[in-house]
Every structure is written in structure tokens, then in C-alpha cells.
Length: 396
Ligand SMILES: *Cc1c(COP(=O)(O)O)cnc(C)c1O
Image (cartoon, rainbow, N blue to C red; front, side):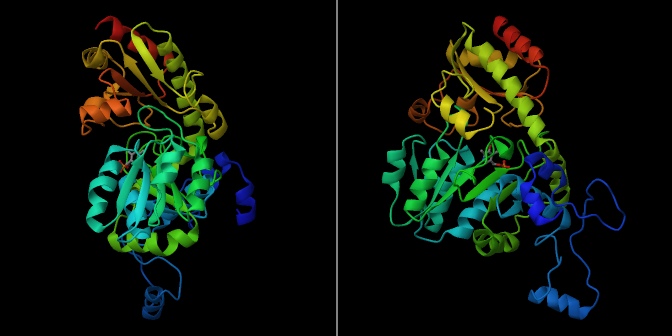
């Protein structure tokens, strides 16, 4: 496909066709290149490649054809100029922050982000002189007042985990750009099938490919998408030397995941919407958090900003932790695991797992109540999932 034609294609055509360069074998499905290094025609070519005078593969820590196909495909889907694949979602965040920032720089971040990211921002980066201020993600005045002369990055996830709070990406991009800062969005929950942060003004998109991009819970991986200028030197340079590269096998699994991403996300949204509506009618449930429900605080924003309301729903049961644990233990179909974005539905007790490091006070402030249960709704028959939740409640 020519570049011009490519950018005009819809997301499904890109997801299935972009980035595939056939080998002389004329394979129909993308080949995997499980090789650590590449050979040169002669010594002069080796010298030219190492010098950077001639493009081409040298070593898979730098470039690999399967990884490149994944990168080109995901960049096209996210409408970014370039994508850099990484060994995990966390290494995507590590390479982005350490690549772009230096000692003395400052980050303003939503408080409601992945626990390990909170740990990186709050405990690890300060060792290298990079400080972070955390703010309430929907308090735009707080975002603005936390910005200092040293602020280089605004960072968030939307919808948030586990309460599915939604922040206005356009508004935050405007705030960031007024202060010469970059807006980085971790688009893990929505994926490009449901939300395009770059179209809304974000500078960089981060992915944990481990979640919906794989979609079947097999591989760890991550990605950074954004302007070539930002990614090329500082971030790619760090990755290439630091070695957080994606393995060709994982890249191949994610490529296959991308091909079905849109239809999977649509099915995740449909199942989750039905479960959220059912939960909302149950007496044992105190509150349901799902952007697709009209009683969700940012339902209208979700309708504007996203093409679907996502596959995560959380709910608070009456009876606190005891009842929440009973329901979790009594389910037959749901897997008890903290992972998400899988075809298999999962059930989690955030207060004692993903958010266990918060103090009781911080949990209360963040809405992580003892009775809160999070579901990542998979692609099983939704009637079976609802019946399973019903019997898990009745038997507890
Ligand atoms: C899982 C996750 C990450 C980290 O990704 P890994 O692939 O586990 O390193 C980052 N952000 C979000 C929102 C996640 O859910």
C-alpha cells in the first residue's frame, strides 16, 4: 500500500494490512523473524550499517522485521507518526520518561493511574531528580495549578482503573500546550478501536500491549506512539541502548491481536454494557461504575470522546469486603486474577490487590471501598456471565 492510500483507510483495514512486507516465499500471513542478528553482504556493508550511512537491520535489540510490522500497524491505527515497541507497558513508560526528561524536570500526573506507574513516578524517578505532582484527574484547575516552570509532561489514563472516571483529553492537551508541556495518555483501557488521543490533541500515547492488543492474555509488551521528532532520538536511543526491546514472537502475537481488535472491543463493550445494566438493577449492589450508564458522572464525555464505553465495570456490594470476597470466590466462570483485557472474564478485589499499597485513608479518598469489585468482561456468552454473578451472590 502507498503511504497516501494508507492514511485514508479505516482502522480495520489498517489493523489487517498495514506494515506487512512479504518475503520471497510469498506467505499470506505475516512471517516471524526469530533472529537476534542479521548478516551483511560484505565488510563494507557492515561498516556502512554501523555508521548509519545505510539503512537496514543489524541486531534485534535495534530493529527486527516482525517488530517493525507491529510498530507500523499500531502507529497507523493510533494516527501517530511513529511507534516504538517495548518489552512491556512499564518499559514503555520507563523509556518515555527517562528518554524525554532530565534531572530537575517535573511531571503532573493523574492520581488515578496504574499502581506500578504511581510507584515509578512517586518513588523511583525522584531518585534521578524527576519529581511528580499527583492531581485529581477531573479537577482541571488542579492540573493547571500543579504546573511549574519545570513541568515537561502531563500524564493520565482515561478511563481510570478501577472506577472508570473519564478526563477530557482535549482540555488537558490545551492546558499542557499552553505551558509548553507534552500530554501523554496511557490508552490501555480503550485502545485505538475506541479512542484516538492523538486526534484529540495528545502528543504521545502509551500502551500495555499485554492487555487488549494481545487480547488473549499470552504475552507481555508495550508501545510508545507519537511524533517522529520526539521518539526518534531520545526515546529510541534509550530503548536501543537500554535493551527494553519487544521480542519478535511477542510482536507477531500482537500483530494477530490487532487484526481482530475492533471486533473484540465492540464485543467487550456489548457484554460489559449488559452486565452493567443488570448490576445496576440488583439489590445487593450499592453502586455501579460504567461510563455507558447514564448515571455515570462523565457519561456524556464518554459518548463524545470514545467510540464505546469499554470492557471494565466496577461495582460496590452491600456488606463490604466479606461479601465482595464471597462473590469473587463463588464465581465459576470468572478467573480470579488482576489482569484485564482478555477474552476470559476476570474478577478482582482492588482494595486488597491492585490498590493494596494505599493507606486506608488514601483508599477512601480514591473511592476504593472494601466492597468494590472490578470485572474485566471477556467474550464468553453474556447470559452465562450474568447467571454466574447471580449465583455467586445468592450462594454467599
Ligand atoms: C498493565 C498496565 C500497565 C503496565 O503494563 P505491563 O505490560 O504489565 O508492563 C500500564 N498501564 C496500564 C493502564 C495497565 O493496565
